[in-house]
Image (cartoon, rainbow, N blue to C red; front, side, top):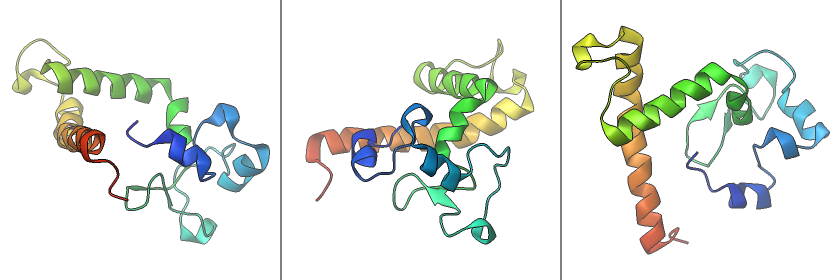
Length: 126
C-alpha cells in the first residue's frame, strides 16, 4: 500500500500480478500455494518490497489473492482512521484476534502515514 509503485515498476520489482511477466511468476513461484519460502528455496527469499522493509516468504503481490485478508486489511484501515472497532463497544468487547491485529497494525499504519506525509514535503532524501 505505501510502496512507491512507479519506482518499483521502473526497477523491475512490480508486484501487480496482472502485469507480472510469466518468467517472473515462475521465479517467484506464484502458482505454489506456499507462503513460507526461505533462503533454502532460492536467493530471492525472503523477499522485500522496499529496501530496509519487511521481509516476506512469498511474493507480496500474492497477499491480494486472499479476499478475507484483503477485507480485514480494509477494516483495519477504517478502524485506524475513524477509531471505530469491529464490534459494538470498546476494546474489551472485541474478539481477541482483532485486538491483536489492531495493536500491531495501527502503530505501523500511523508510522507509514507520517513517513508518506514527510516525503510529500521534503522529498525522498536523494
